[in-house]
Length: 90
Length: 401
Image 1 (cartoon, rainbow over the protein chains, first blue to last red):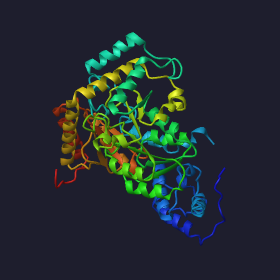
Image 2 (cartoon, each protein chain N blue to C red):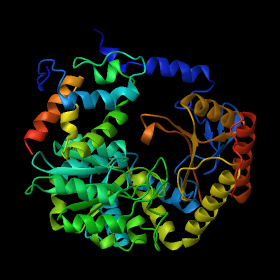
Image 3 (cartoon, rainbow over the protein chains, first blue to last red):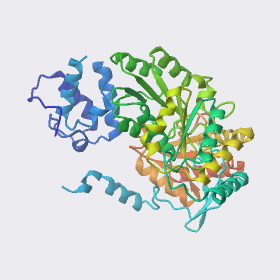
Image 4 (cartoon, rainbow over the protein chains, first blue to last red):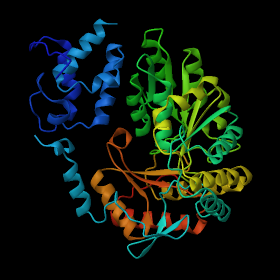
């Protein structure tokens, strides 16, 4: 179902740490954000806010993040993996 | 697992809206009295959210042309443009728009939504890249999806941000930049000349959606691109007949010779019934009024400035400088819904706009101005806003008008 694979839980991934920080303002119920956290259902973030967040990520990592790819991203792990892939492909 | 699970919080939102009073997204106008007034629930309502910028929907000449067209050509075309649904009325309206915009090729669509869908999906394909302003209308987003192209958003009204994102793209693929002239929610205007400079430098194409700006901006009412003096540098213009042009339908225009190929490749152009005779005749008649009566535009701007001045001097927070769209920012969705209900109870209809249909999770009471409104009606709208805002304790002291 998820075309973007999820890599094993590693605490020392700076991209994962950065995503947790970026998503923190939307964590209304103060859950622990893991790679399995669903971005739109577990956090209080609407579809437009997700798109705005993606623009920040693009600028931070100097990547282009096509909208077509965004629809395939469900979890924080998917997002982190997509950033790794796009950064690698630069 | 239920088919309707995907609607998530929508049932709850619907309930919240219903408990606040009338449903802002389900208002029924029982009778339209004029371009500026309607009857709803047995009450006379002042219309301040119609996009009827030039107020031509009840213009006697436009009504007559539409009536004559029905009598002469029938109530519907019952066919698509590529079958039995191209009438002389379609082609003559395309020629009139071509003359008005100074663009060699014009395609008439059955709605403004389809004009964006058909133009974007017709022009761009899976090998192309589209860059869209973040605040673009849903029809632009949907057109992008239908195209299968790679889609990148850039920051709203920022040519510098577009420049940066174009810079990041791998060279080679075709690039189509999409912006709007006047944005429908905040009523802010695109810096067209700066965007033209950026797209030219990167060898990209530029599409400007002038749905809200035709009839409002430019020395001859052709839109924001004309106002900025760059109309001939915009590759594609998309517009609608359902705002200034008082009808239904949409159009797309270009000087590129290849644009005519969309007649044989744009699915939203080909696979839908063509625009009806009454709508075509009304759009044509309204275009004639737009071109021959510049006073419509000056009345519109007089009203726009008066409404903007009136609302901002109350201490309400507005989203942009004066234009045909004057939107009031309200701190939360709940307050916006309550404010909207009180306005409606007091006999004033405006548009309620809430996230995710708005940029930056903003809640708005969106007014659109019409040339047909009288100065007294504008005053009444401002007074009603003032009374409601005071009752709700939403007025902040203001330092300047």
